[in-house]
Length: 140
Image 1 (cartoon, one colour):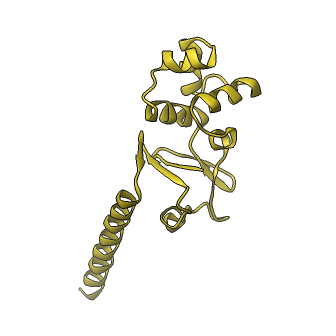
Image 2 (cartoon, rainbow, N blue to C red; image 1 turned 30 degrees about the vertical axis):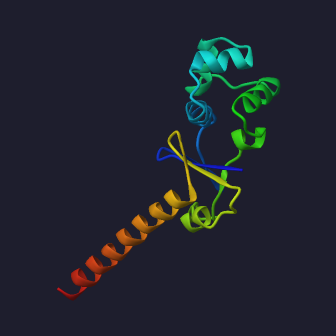
Image 3 (cartoon, helix red, strand yellow; image 1 turned 90 degrees about the vertical axis):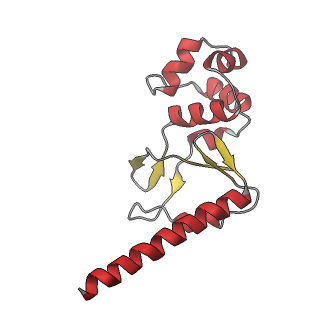
């Protein structure tokens, strides 16, 4: 399973999702593939890959299957949305506590468990600082 963290996300009903095009681009870059390289693997033109990545085209089920195989993921990893609460919130704790076989990506880099723990410590430190600032601001 892949979790791809990307800042620009779109909200859909009960989930937060990276666009299909952004997923394709992120996974392609993570494998070190060019658009031409992915086009050759999937038997389509580079222009078509460019159109997919910019969300101007939607792949057929056959192409989606070839894309998933070429990007070394399951089809559901390309099309699924991340679960969120009914309020539309994504709990980062779920990402940090994901099963060991879950891969977490940021941009085009797969985060190792040590790196993920470091990111979590940065977030924890920032939250502690903000809470301290709130306490100081509240006592003024």
